[in-house]
Image: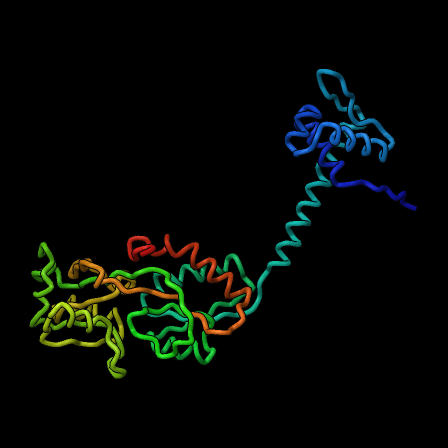
Length: 313
């Protein structure tokens, strides 16, 4: 029959600290314990073991032969206990399940794709599904419970005002022009030159929603034609072909605009920024998975959007 041995974890911790810090007083400072308490812990451990572990003198602490053999066992025991605690914490906080995140093209590529990759590494048991749409489509998806959270622009007014939201950042809006276009090098940038141009914007050609048309009206620009195109990559190709100029969100431009035939220019003033907000359905109980994703979003968005978005504004 194995003899029952009652040992307290604090005794082992104190014993190892005395050895590591070469004394009772120094060990007490490291552990936040008084010197008498340190001495009492070591004495209790020795009594429980029935052996002397340390030889105490005025100048130094020396391990006995028994103490020298017991020390690595004590260290190993403490390490195993710590590993067990960490494993339990990991199991306790290990998330499983599925969340659906709403976004829009451009933002999904620049922000959500790397964010989802990081989230998968931290929480491999959670499946994150992306659903893209324009602001009103994302709002409807939120209302009908088809997405858990959504990141959408706030310049398209909400229809369902019971959907709460929080500010994240402002996305810059940029001008995309052929390399040889006067607006490619104009300084200062005269947006009046947009008049009589074919200006391409993103949006739903059939749904009546077009990004930035209202901003063109506010600066008094009178384009010859406003062409609403769903895909930013198509817009980039049309601009490169010399068929017009474009106004895009910086996220979409970062992904879609490439090559030496096209120039991207920042547009001046607060008019040419749009607020991005995080939307969550009212009354929905927050799940651990959603909370974890939102927490990671706030942590990583500043670095992932650096140079693209103004953070915060």
